[in-house]
Image 1 (cartoon, one colour):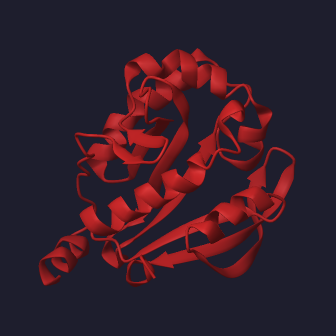
Image 2 (spheres, rainbow, N blue to C red):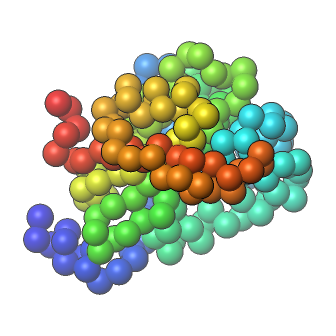
Length: 197
């Protein structure tokens, strides 16, 4: 563990995404592809996504192109580990997005964020995606803590955190500027030592 901590102390590092998809049940996580552009634009037409995330609305091809272009730099710079959520049986079928982001390498910490296309909701995909990416972050990136922030007005996202073993720790008042005004956020945390309990 000492060598991992020494790497963290030296600052950001390049992230290497897995070569094969991460799979649990009907859900898989894979690296984003340029061919995802059209499906990404279609999914992000849902105003509920921008309501609870930082995804812009309206969302057009230029937004999707910018996101798909910057993902390479984000991985190389160690600032984001972005995955497409797809069907385990049809890995071309885009269901959503999940990422580890806002890394603090010195403190072995990151935040998980996600969204899911409207037609994919209610099937457990986000819960499985969050479990997959947090397990990967603890095992392969040496993280010791992962944060999850969910708006107080978004109980579905809070339930995802609870199903994935996160502990509710605080309410952060007026934390983000959302589409409908300032949002209070529920702060959840998951420790590597708690995984599997």
